[in-house]
Image (cartoon, rainbow, N blue to C red; front, side, top):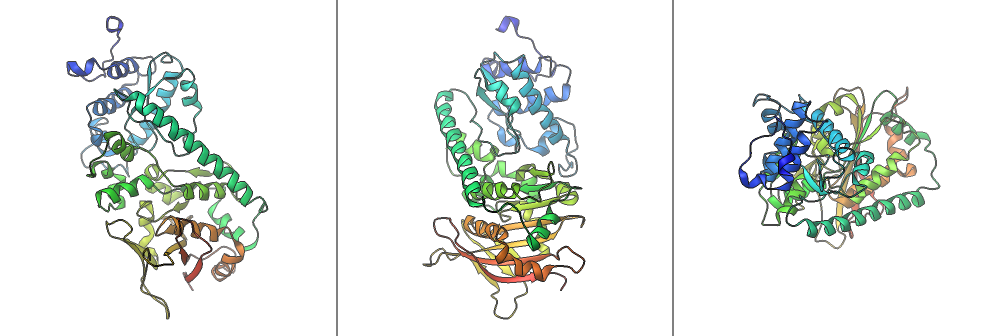
Length: 438
């Protein structure tokens, strides 16, 4: 293979030991292929991330560092204001899929860059894998394999088990959602007003599940990261307790969310008010501030696992607060009414296992759309909040109070209490409400 190896002018120099790695030889062949040899920035992007990965320096593969080192942006460059890395990453994923479906279909490995990060993975190539890569939807969370290498065989069967499990989970959700809501074909009355404001033909509606991997990283590192550091990818440099490097890389790079969040997203997609082509399922690591300015959004999970909820906390009466210890969280009631507490905290040690959640319907950042926050102190709280939204008889009194004379709804907040037993939430109790502008 070495005598016929083509090279690309965009392939970075490498020490001799790495040149013996078949994965590095694959990178060179891809960079010199017909789909990449006339695309210098895409080739440079591919070679850079593969070089850092094969050297074990995945923590350097962040959006900010890619902007500086690959695209020549200044050190002061802000990814939230300049999306060049995200744009080229989308092109790179598409070209890699096309390459391994055609010119590279006989390669022993293929290269993937999972959505939600920029760290490449090397996957053993199956006969039909390239075609699958071209047809694979990118809006749903994926379980990607660990970096292939000397332990490829061990990780191959792990990956297979994970994919089987994940497929069963998704199939179960479809069946569960169908059975649970088969008698509910349409919405009516006040809930219809709520959903028509969140789903409109003139704007996208982003449904954003929680980033469960981010929550786990904070728990393991005992570090609470705000939104600004989440957007800059600082979670990839958190110090974790000793663990297998593959497991650590999975937490840093893969897109994990909860079954509860997937169930909520599935139920939202079945609402009759959804505008075809305007519902976008967007993982938290892919969301950008402009999405919350120009479109509608439904954010699932509190700011500990869905940091974008932080953007709207200062506008709320019921605000979430955290310490960096596991399960150390509570809801602050900034302006208690008579009979209300100043804070509400999980009661993990008590016999009732009480937990709390907040539903908030508020304007988007530009005031030309709406945002719905579905936040729980734990998974059971988030589940209880979501279920209330799909039961008109329970939420109708609050929606009636929030109704505007000419149509539409005022911003509102609902504080809920439920019981966390085995991470499942029975019916919730409405503890307090706030209707803005009354």
